[in-house]
Picture 1: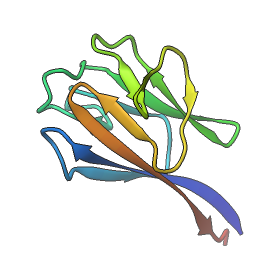
Picture 2: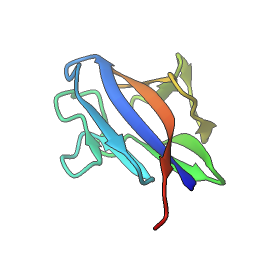
Picture 3: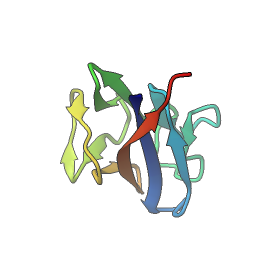
Length: 109
């Protein structure tokens, strides 16, 4: 058996409250563009390519992509990659996103 990280992000505040999506592969992009992995097209304060979530050595990180209004993790502005943990809150524009990181057991057959 192997385990694979699964990330679910859910908008808990802002114009797209209730939107959620689960991912079993990283990296993912968050932004206003419709081709983002997690598009936030209804928030004009979100940059086209705002931030990204990626994995490095079994840990998950958040990075700002030089957005106009910045990216915040648990209320703190981020300037370089930061470790993302379960129940962390990401703020982009006027949107608040909650992160759920779980381990899913997979059986190789």
